Amino acid sequence: MSLGSAGFEINFPDVSYNKDFQQEYTDLVNPLGKTIFAGRNRANVFIYAMVLAISNGVEKKSIEKGKKAPNLPPDAFTDEMRWFMRTVAIMDSEDLEIFLDHRKVLDIAESYANAGFPLVLDLVNKTIPGEDIEAVFETALRDQIKNRQKKN
View 1: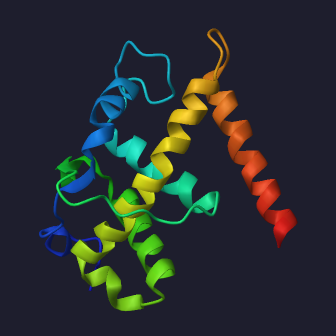
View 2: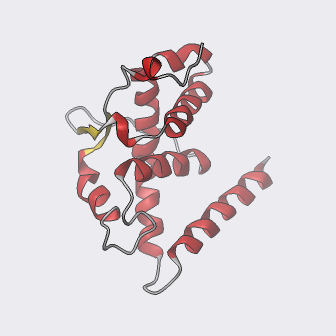
C-alpha cells in the first residue's frame, strides 16, 4: 500500500488561515515584493508560519469562528508539505492514526500557522531595504535552533 498514492489524498480539504491575515498573505507572495516569499504561493507562507511557531515553542492558536479563510486549495501543497503537516499533527496529538483524519491534521496545522504568522511578519518587518532577506531568515532560524539546543 502506497500512502503517497492519489487515492489517499482525494479527500484532502482546502486549508484555512485567519481572514485577518488575508492581505498580508497576498502581499508576502506578490511577485514584485521584496520578501523571500515573492513569487511563491500562500502555501509556502502557511508552512513557514507553522514551522516558526513550532520552532519558537509558541502555543498553537485556533482561528476564531467566522475568521477562517478556507482558500488554500489542496493542490497548492506539495506531498512533502502535506506529510509535514501530518507529522506535526502526530507530534502534537501523540496519536499515530491522526494522519488518516485530514480535518484533524489541518486543524492542528492551521492553529500553529495562525500562531506563527505574526512571527513571519515580524521577521519581514525587521529587514532593512537592500539587505539579503534570505540571509536574515536563515540567520533567524539558525538562532532559534541554537537557542533550542541550549534549552535541551
